[in-house]
Length: 404
Image 1 (cartoon, rainbow, N blue to C red):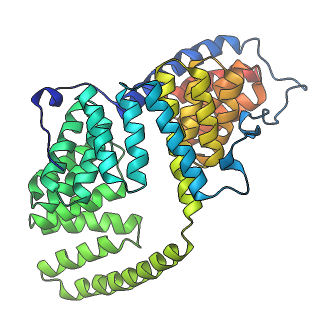
Image 2 (cartoon, helix red, strand yellow):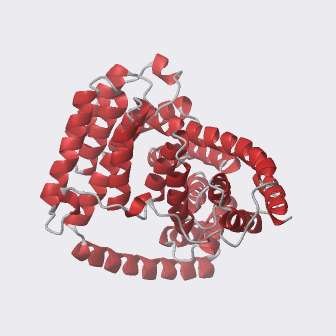
């Protein structure tokens, strides 16, 4: 797959994930306004004996018809639905890069690499700055061991969409594959300093330090990973190498033994997973992602009914996917449909009970719906999780007024 570079493209603006980030910031800003208004509203919104703690009737419980929801569904039938969805989307919006990218993603998930590359390149022919297409082409390049091409694509995405948290990990991985440990270190250190980062980032940083022979820092990174995830075989292997390089042979051998045991356990698990693999389950995942992509495109064109239809289907197929639920809740919030947004929010906090923002959002929605008791409960949960959070300070004012 050839590398297409463009200096104009490198100076570009956002794509799909950037749009999602903007939506989140807009929603957060709106939430501050809502909370401010609710402080006043709470002066008349008082709990009483008739206020129910019961959950709202959920939009998520409604029955949905379709071959993919039938007991007789097969992987082949489900994938046919996914193909019809992307064909319909690209026919409806033939010059929309997000629609073309949705078709590319479906092809990529099914291993149709040539078809995926063609669709992503078509998306770039419409918008050379479309980050999602560049990211997809970067993934394909790295999987084909074309790491220099992958680096170029990921660097483009990093410039176009600097807030995309996916990029530093994959960019650093490609840099390490071509022996550019110093550059990988800079990418990862910047990522770690500016983001709530993952253990994977620390593990890769350890690999970068190992590659540049900065063994003390490598050991510190790998020890941090092991402290958080004792079963990380790659971290134990990295520790073994770094410790051996510094002359700590006995300790290195301990980590080497742990690595070998974990590697054997991983091989057994992979074999078991392969035996348990469900073609139907995978096909359902592909279709759910397709519906989420369709919804994103339809919403961007203000066809909110089509967006809702697609998202409800995505959630029905994969009810534990918090990204689909959040996407659906953002749609309802944008349309001012508070009851539906609250019912989706109830499911979100079940899946993500430690996330303060989701409890605050749910509390605000309950208050908007004149349900003070569950609003208090939601706000208090947020306050318990993070008492110093600015939004929680607003929530404290609301709770205090409601209790007067």
